[in-house]
Image (cartoon, rainbow, N blue to C red):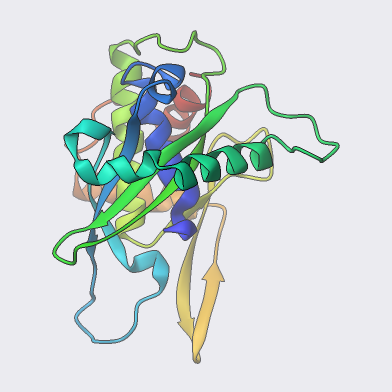
Length: 224
């Protein structure tokens, strides 16, 4: 799921913002759990990794809810999160650490009907304009719901979201991989994300609940 790391990070951040805050979740034995389903287009051909899975569920779990999650608090996993946090903080580099970086949050991925699972961690950040732990108001919560839906649908369709290189752009870039010979070609256009969301809204008009335009939904997230 590395190819969808940015999109999964957005889903994780929303889960933390709406469930007690970033620091609260880091201070408790919580894990972001993604339940995945295998995808197939029915052709028997190998799919690109960006189209291999769909999200069946995504939720913050306390370790007590599933004994399998106990492994994330074994010494090697704790040390790996500490190592990743030092890396993200730029230890040994001359860069200035991001003061909003709060920690390395445990993540777990489980594939339905296969019995496969793997662990990792995600760099998580405190809100930029609100006290951490503040509960979002209703309009913000609805915008977060729309964004989570958008990200989930992007993964289902094999659309890869990446942070824009332009810091003034709140909407990320989107890309897809298309077959080319024996390999794959990455395709991205400036309007790809907007076009895909417009199309999805036309098919599923009741799935989006905030009533906000695309850019405003991302602004709400970026400015939380």
